[in-house]
Length: 434
Image (cartoon, rainbow, N blue to C red; front, side):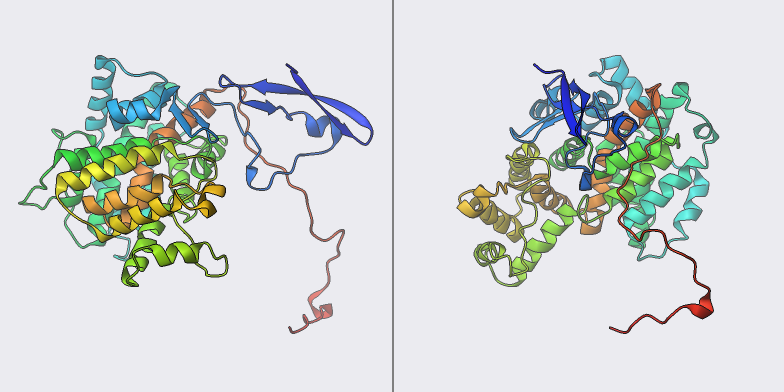
């Protein structure tokens, strides 16, 4: 097997090392390309560019494989919990009973926000989007912990990690209550992670929310399935910011901002909006399927296809089964679920979608599950952010632990004007009108 690649530029051959990962993924190391040739690579959207070496998550998009630290997502979904999986992702191994208990205790000890942070919530209008509040409050929270500032301190990593993972759900629940004019509900130390979030979201001062095991498990599974997903937009953003040696909370806040985009974390919300539109029109999904195949119709089948997966998203298989189980357990029917099932069945048997490998992804069913749990649409991306926090923290740690880490600084190919000159304002011509 070749251990080097050869690149010919202007008649000169340059040798570039080939790097191979543990799953036989291969990459050409171009770190010295500009130094030796004066050239850079150009890869708009980074679809063919590896930005780092990482030990956290493996994806094979052709085969529909997802593994956290080598463990298949199917095994974790069936046997693990979000918090145990979070430990695995962040620390690199499944915890012992003692390690898991210590981690859980740290989460409980750090679940409350500093009381002065309540005044920050009051500064947002009632119409503020929960993602805007989440990003702002994560950043603001760092001000209350002076130990976050300054150089990277591994000795403080455990408590900062627990504080961020624990408080992100408190911030999220408080932002929901604030936007609906409801009094905030404080966390209960007797509740586990996901149950506590539901308690803070839906309890009332004198009437606690009924924690149904099926609902708690469904939301915990959503968190688990979103815990990491390799170098996606938000994770790459976290690594970019971390490379400047910014603190953990600042990096997480940047990740929230990247996740907010409708092409990233907003996809499950778009699925619900599509299903609602179909339902309002009186369609059972059949007309929409045909319209989606017409590129001039303006209709797009949301929740199908994926940038990485060219096969069935393994998370979608898991969450579809969980969604069916949740609806049976709650004895509820949802016309949107029936439409979703028709869309899936049609797409999986229609040559148009099969040829384009447009299979359902995790967003297709996660929105329906959250809707059944009672989580409003504007909170969907916030749920995604809570789930993705372990992956962001693990990637932050890889940057900080790497003694050779350098600040990220991509290059570009300039296509603007050549040498230009400053023109005094009195000599400038008015632009021609269109």
